[in-house]
View 1: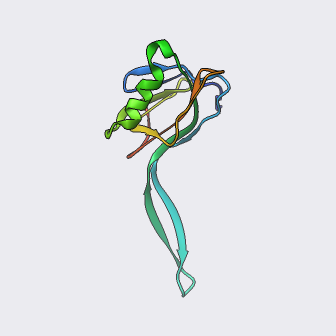
View 2 (view 1 turned 45 degrees about the horizontal axis):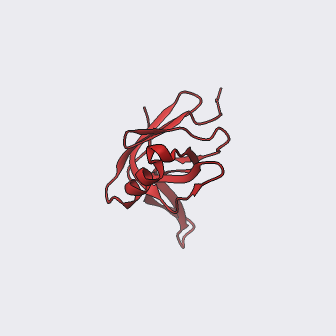
Length: 126
């Protein structure tokens, strides 16, 4: 039986962030994406393209006293990947090496940031 629910926490480069309880994120493990292309004789071939892992739709709690926004921006500015771990309501933990991708803004009303994480290799269950 599958268990859904709120993300328990997100750890990025050793700093733990709470996630908004109503955030609905999407997880892509990475590996390969396949495409089937036809041949003229009616057969086909598979084109395998490497794909990165990605978790989008994250809504992280931001604490200005901790400097969370600046911390996340520094990671986004960095040229290296960082250890990322996401703990789900089911107790499953997925981990990978990655960074913040796309635009990141902090809402002053909800004190949250919409964050997308991605990286090379695979996001693996621990």
